[in-house]
Length: 330
Image (cartoon, rainbow, N blue to C red; front, side, top):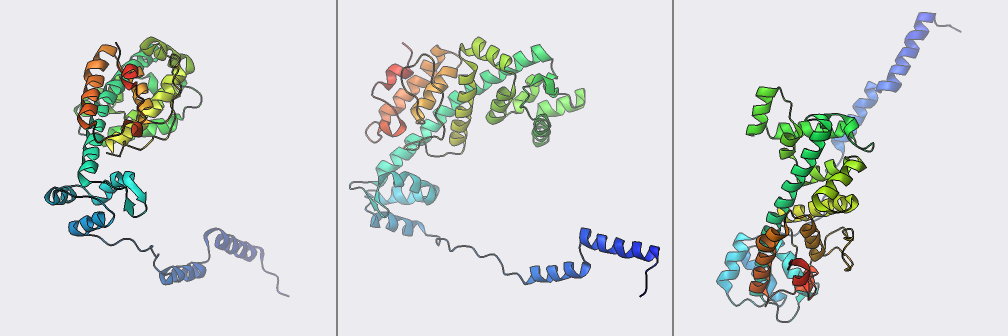
């Protein structure tokens, strides 16, 4: 029996350990060959593209009434059929048949109502977002300093500060062409006071910032700005962030509930649900001024509903019969 010298045993052990740790080159080669021979991933067969004429024929076959063919051709040439299909789906009686009397013109009126409603909501959401930026940045900066947000101790313990700082870096990197970024990079070496950096925040980022604040700080802001419990404000910001995303991505609001149920307002008997109407109640509660709400939003909403009253069903967006009494301050 030949006994290996100590240095040979070390080499053998080193080779085995290396092979176990990094893999045998021969095995790697075989695995590479296997990968090259592996079949391409197979996708399920998808629907074939259709011309505008094909799309119209499909609508007709499902029982859709088209009184103005030129209008239908124009609409389908400028709006994706798949997008419009979400609105036609409201009228489906079966998988391939619309309810009797379903007309292209009525569906397009609902589409237009939905589009104008989203635009109106975005204007109101903008006011809430800007108000929240001001209240949060003013309070936090005065208590913790202009750059206090860079200190983990200025937040609640559940706050993930490393992830937060990475998000800030991405915000700055994605906005290098903005004047506020170039100015603070050049003059202040990349130091951004909270009220400046918050101008780059999305609604979602703003919501997360508030949620991660200390409870006493959230309570102080909620009571001073809105005379509301902080848990309501925190929850409602989440809800409005979802609503804003729905509006910003042009998703259908009509006959389409949202995902979360807002917290019950302390002064309201109505049970909250995940309908658009209840999200508008939340929007009203966080809107900066009630007199501006009446003129800038509620009055315009009333006119919009009146214009499309013959084709829309307000119950599809959760509106009760006394919706004006709830949304309009007397």
